[in-house]
Length: 467
Image (cartoon, rainbow, N blue to C red; front, side, top):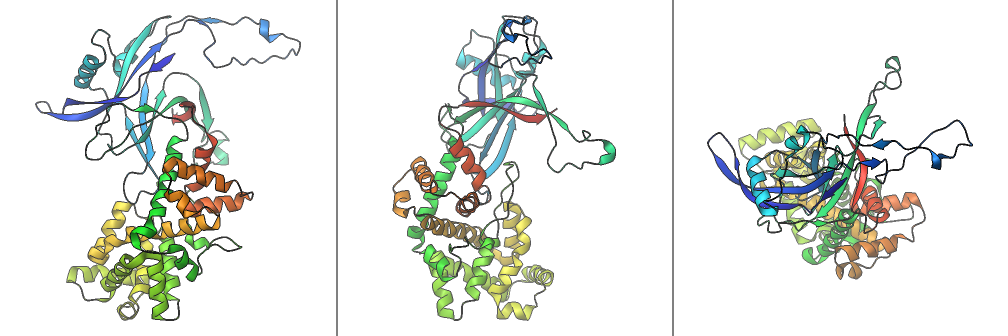
């Protein structure tokens, strides 16, 4: 039996060397485990198999389990929340429970000095006798304070396991059908939320969340952010995409305006794709005259976008210092572009030069852009995000969800408005495309989790960790 108190945080002194301490914010979860002696009945049903269809299973004897149990706790605090620019909608972070004696003493003094608290090592040291209960604490250090939504996964409460084939497994006939299978343990997942603050983490206690809460808040917040862009940039993105032929039509939306599919695994990083931005710039360059090109850029990005694209073009076509020139020449050669062609059509060269950035992480992409474009390189993330927002606004218009309705809502209400609008979509393929256009590659999976699980379910069982 497992019970817990909501997670809290505390500032304590932790050792960094044999003679040096530093003050650190520690998150912790106080819990109780009990060896419940008696018949096998803990909420999990006993399944029996018999060859005799006439056997009355309700009268079968059930073995009493009254033995000591050793609890080998394994706590992982996980968050899938993106908290930094360039991370997309989902960014996986995981923190392992650590044994911190100095923190343990402070936590016990705060919670209940009369009750012994065991860390994970002490909890696993001795078996728990039938009917005995013990109190323990899991502790984590260096948690990103910007996190609002997180889960704590507890392994060791059950011996249930599952066989599964890991993604990308190389299954060879010579090794047999089960050679690549892994044993995966069943874990308890607990959901929580707390207001995050990068500068001042004041909330010392988290609240119990519910399945789908993170996904609903994340998608709703993205809609609010998208809806704010026209006012901030003095732009009309839907009109701009329509002018470029990139809006919604009978055949859906241009597939080059969507990010590549990353699958459903949230642990695969979503670093965003440059492909939609490249598509927009190519369409702008294809317009017949300078006036039409300038108008399209202003509609999609506003005046700020005009300046940013000009800065990137100048970074390719204008003279630069020798170090930057060497980097630029190497990049042009890899892209098959001559210096003369880059000088004549610098924005077209930009489109090709940023192609290799696609596979880079956000930090690597920023570094590479800085080396190639100088200060103008920092504009790429903003331009990428504006294209995502423009695509989302055009999609809201296509599904008949008024922008004003989103702008007047909070995050949960914005998601509920979207949910109502999407009830009209009967074609699963079109619904998937709409969600990809609104939220990127992760959109369909996030929306499924947000809409399938309802408030009140604050925990679940999942097979997560390999043996």
